[in-house]
Length: 147
Image: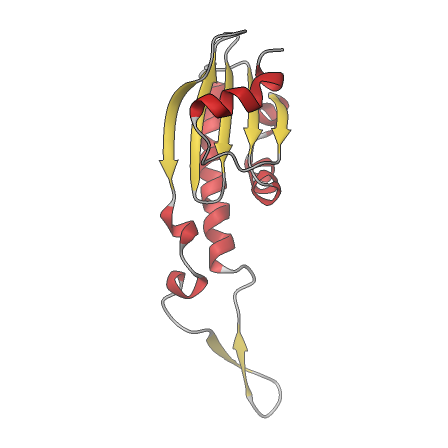
């Protein structure tokens, strides 16, 4: 198995996959994924108002979705990123992984990874580094990557 480390830097609407081949090897951008639906407002993500249901009383009730549409989009995005990590593991493209994302999105990613891939996650860093330059990212992650 290669000694490559995959670094996923993400938030609910953007993700970048990087690879690091070893000490002082730097970061190589593998893939960048944009998920614009997560940036939309809840009202823009639904096509209709809440459905109606007959209540046991004299009036009608309104049924709200259990999960807000924006949260649902973030969950779908986390699932697609987890699938990418799962596939990379099964293809033996990395030996360990580092997840960098805001706390709420890290939770979604953790819940979406399969058990063998989750075991390869060496670090979980609860920060949003999606807007920093690659050079700045390498500097901020150096203690975690170049061990």
